[in-house]
Length: 253
Image (cartoon, rainbow, N blue to C red; front, side, top):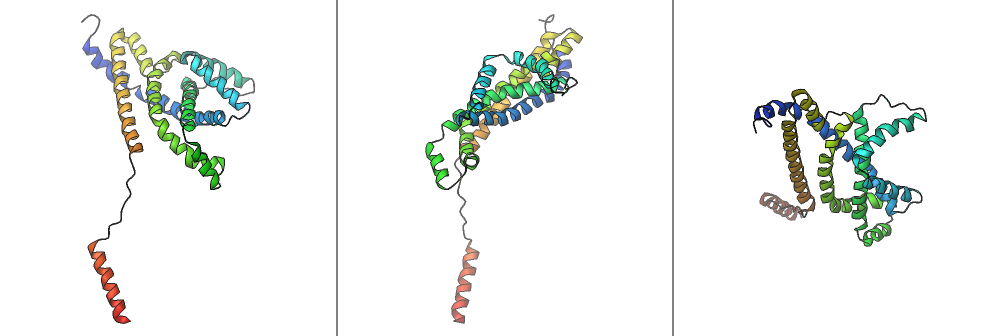
């Protein structure tokens, strides 16, 4: 055990691996933001069956769900510069991290779109009819009625997807990005101690996953908690003042 695993290296390497945590969290953050925005658009196109966009969205979701994230990463990294270069836009000097943001954002959008579509479809048709009866436009119906209700339904599945997204970021090092796993690979080559680095990465991912699950559990309970109606209790002093005012008015009359 002493030959293959040494705790002193764990203590030495832990701060170095932890320094790459912000990069991993940024990937999760940008992927969630991009995925939420595009996922809503894709879900809307499929629910409303918009011509061309509906078919394109279905093919896009099938492609993303049917291919590994690693394949998508290299398609974006090598394909996007060529595609934009054909119309005169040069992004060959972009930082590799930007391609990671785009890849994980596009991938997350496909999964989020299915969650949003399922949640929106579960909203009763009576909500559509009620919104139409008071003259709301389609955009107002979605914004004020459907999305808030569907959000509560979709929230648990979104939490699970974000935790999975965090774990899938472990493949970002394939493009040379120094996230947690990229740092582990670099330090392993420098210190010739790979097992300790993977142990540290496992501990960090476990702690982050459990923490995210706890946060989403708390948020879910708050979202689903019944709203309390605040009652304005009249204080005894206010009652005395009101009675005094009525007595004065009677005496004046």
